[in-house]
Length: 232
Image (cartoon, one colour):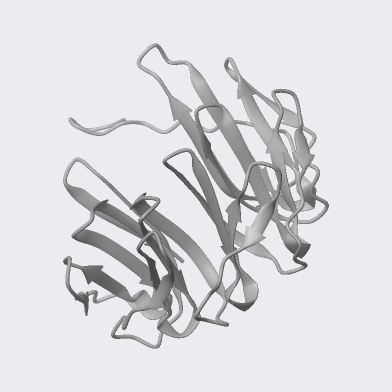
């Protein structure tokens, strides 16, 4: 039973042996919207009413990320795979890379994706094209407030920022791999990673935050004035 102020999470039974690595969606006040869950073997599940149904993904390996908005959804995975949802199935789209695509982000009706070898991709309407990147690191996550304020995190403490004209490296204050990033505003951004690492952007610099735990933190998000980081 939940205590006051808590919500109870109920399991969604899939009946499948797959493991899942990505989830994304958007919902309205009436309870409508989209929900996609990505997993291994190219599996993507879509919520239709109360049920989850498998949809064709166009991706053979693991689906690492799903992102989108305004009924325009993309999935990313191994071997440079990317696919766009056409209302029924995810249809492969060109990326011109064989590198794994590990993260994606939608903002201002644009789609960005990041992955191995410092790769940063931008959707051009028909295909993804590479953006000049100052890093060769493994890039794991991307978040931003607009198309001219984007952050990317990666291995060895890599932090990159896009100001609308180009990407630049920004000191993070750590050499630990950063796996996820999220913010509530331009001057309040968090990145988390291995050995319990948490760093925060205050609008002018990144600074390490106190965390007594040393387990890897795989994801960070916030709501209601609180920030939550989860891991293993």
